[in-house]
Length: 207
Image: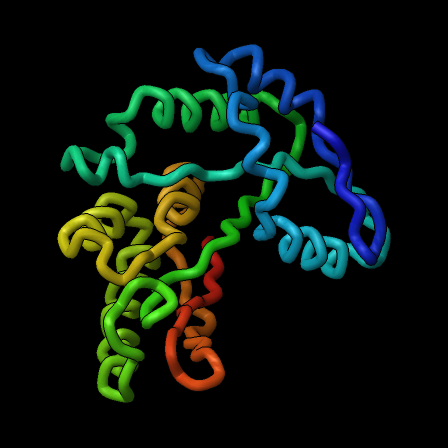
């Protein structure tokens, strides 16, 4: 796993722990490494971290690219019933617990993707956006309660009709965090110029 170059400097990967993960997992975590080549979500988080630690405080990262949950969703089962996902969560949690690091988990994830660019037949209306916000905030209520299963089941119940691409990283975050509750800091909707489509997102902290 290589280090990452950003406009604010280099971010190092924690290669020792990554090697430990690879050794203890019952599958090859790098079998689909090529998909990282065009994935952009970590870029924003690395810049965020470099800005937060602009005083020079050293830190390293273990980048994790979360795959789709559509296979388990189509089977009507929970993600933890997938053997690979279960093994990954268990091994990552144990590896970090055994290390000397203070660990911070960050989920790079957005919420709904609606409108013509995402397969809908019409652009989002004003009433649609208001209802979308209500549904998103209800979903985030489960996240605030650290209820990963309620979060997942809410999306599964409607067959992910809002295209919540943040489902895998948010669910993964909730299964890893040792926290009592989350707090919603902000919620926003990014409507494309012309109003044809919308992507929603939020920021949260956990303690």
